[in-house]
Amino acid sequence: MLLLDHYLEVFKLKPGALPGSTALYQARASGHFTEVHDAFYKEARHRLGDAGGTRAMVEVLLSHRSLPARAVVSGMRSALSVGSVDPALVVIKARRSGRTRRVGGADRERTQTLRSSDTESFSLRRTLGGEQVTKMTDTAALAAIGAATRELRLPVVRQDAGRLAEVAERGRLSYLAYLAEVLSAEVDERLDHRRQRRITEARFPRVKRLSDFDLAAAPTINPATFSMLASCSFLSAGEPVVLLGDSGTGKSHLLIGLGMAACEQGRKVRYVTPAQLVNELVEAADERRLSRIVARFGRLDLLCLDELGYVKLDTRGSELLFQILTEREERASVAVASNLPFSEWGGIIGDPRLVAAIVDRLTFNAHIIETGTESFRLRTTRARGTRTRPGAKLSEHSGATTS
Image (cartoon, rainbow, N blue to C red; front, side):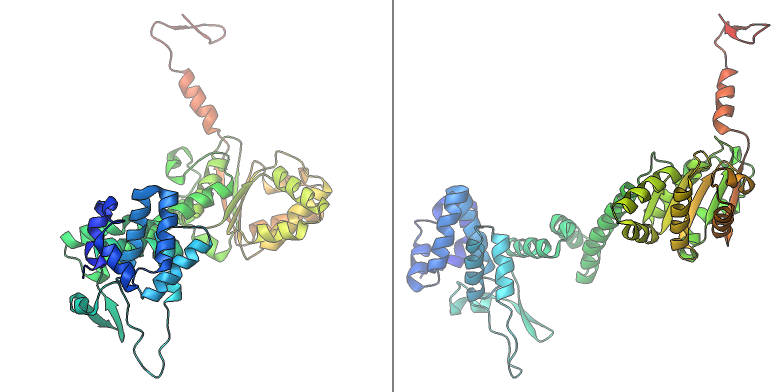
């Protein structure tokens, strides 16, 4: 008798040879190729064409080498019920269906395959935790990995498992080392996606990094304090950061840089100006969603509040801002950038009691950094203005450059 299982690799390469093969005829006659197999094969050929449908059928038949026959049949039936002929889905459904419990300490049901009993000796098995594990071909293994990783949502493992297996084989890595490599690749990819998602959700107006900040141009900033802030260690203690200085001295650069550094650590960050924050809270209050929005801001690891001092807040806006700061007090960090010293905050917040309460919350255990009074942008512009074109002359009266 010609065993269908012996020719599966050949049929995968030459799908046209399967439909009229003697092996398929004998498998049908013996009952190994069931009516469910026929129904799946017919639907696969209808949807994918003769070649594609045959390859899908071969992938399903290969799964018999590692799964119980009844489980595979159940998997095909389940896939057809949802209108699918995907072999990966068949394997997933088959694994779910094939899980059996031990009764009275007996071994699990042995795998039933399209192979006859006289070929069982070629199935290499080893004991693992009391269960029998069947050695499978690389093709079947990759199909099983594809199905499992789709179920577990591990796209990097699905994509790189084969390549990393070749690398591991060449480097003679142990099974544990190979598993560590595969899982590390998945974790690295997820961390990268998380960092990018955190940066997008923070809504920074532009990208600024602390590594690009010129400390030499800001002599008032202590390098040790700068390094401490760059490590984001203040976030764990929920300590505030206050940046004070005139316009153009690097406050926004530092604020966004702190936020970016926190995002790259996987922290939840939101950048907003006081005017934007108040508008968002007013809209939420009008729509009776204020408590939910306040709680959302309370769950952030870092709230970056920029340009405090440029726009005056009315009484309602000041109260809403105070509500956010109270929600985060001594629990989560707030980083604020302002062009005004604390003594002048009364000019933007009308209620003296609110001013005192807000300043109190922002300065308790805070890291206060003064960025100075000389505008970096203005200094850069002046430096560029001193560089004249060859042959240019300065006007004696106006100082303008002429040619």
